[in-house]
Image 1 (tube, rainbow, N blue to C red):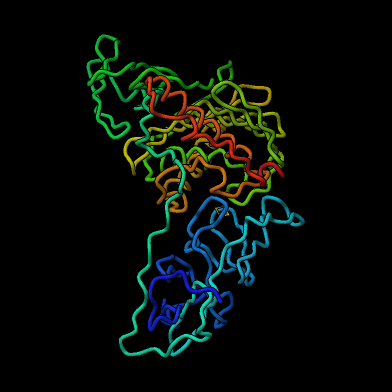
Image 2: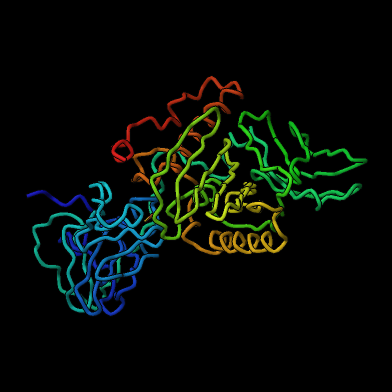
Length: 426
Ligand code: FES
């Protein structure tokens, strides 16, 4: 029989006390056993305790944010549902008849049991088929941090991001003769406007005004820029910028996600080009397309059944490791006549609500960055835009490091070409 790989447990039994039974209900609880994190939960009120690995394999969301629905543990982000033994039963974005891929399953410990008012976990097979008796001195094991992704992630302090134009303010925030102190990539710049000319200190590769936004490029840009809609009859407005603790790349990944909010989109078609990609799908009656310019500029277009069109222009400003400022522009075009003020106001409200979802919902926060190694997450067919984003960012990092003339960085440090069977099958 295999011996336990875990650190010493009480009496060397392989069993670890993780929580008092009374503290475990139908809300998932983070616990630790054998130096590994788990979630424990009752999938029915008063039912037996289930223990599972603590992260959703899809986008690595913590399952402590999940809920119990119909006897299954449901992830908070896209609603994937898991059985008591960790099997992924449902992926809503794929429809009711789709079979989740095997990699979508969670892992489970060898055993979980209750005894003497405690929940015990044996992470690995042990010779002791029952947990030991609890004693007065029994305490719950410490809860380890959730492990960070093993491969590269794009966080807000990624040095390569210096090789891109970033939004730092709306143009109307900077009057002639005025100045602003802005944060970007963990540094402070002062941007001032004198006699129509913009300057930045300390010196940057460039500072400019474009599309009603002030932009700053710390070093020579190697990314691509998206085009924003401009035609007679289009009305537009920038929403007031807001700040989130989610990394900039995670914000972009959230906005281009066709399945966000429980939607069931068609399978996106992705076309990659130089420094970006375009993805198209249908969502309810709308034809949706997103255009991404490396590293992090995004335009989403929705063609509605009545002939009107609306665009969301998402620009993200990676200020600090835990701070991203989001600049979101609303653009609307009427079916036959110029868009009305009321139509623009309605769209601003709609995008504002969408923005609030990302800013206030901690499902999108608490992560150091966007993982680039495809095998670290599980991607299904509707994730094609997210997969394209990861590939574009990996290529951008390589281009930026080449621009710095680095001879020490191998392209393989950020490459995501490892084949992902789920993507290939999608
Ligand atoms: S369903 Fe869990 S992160 Fe998407």
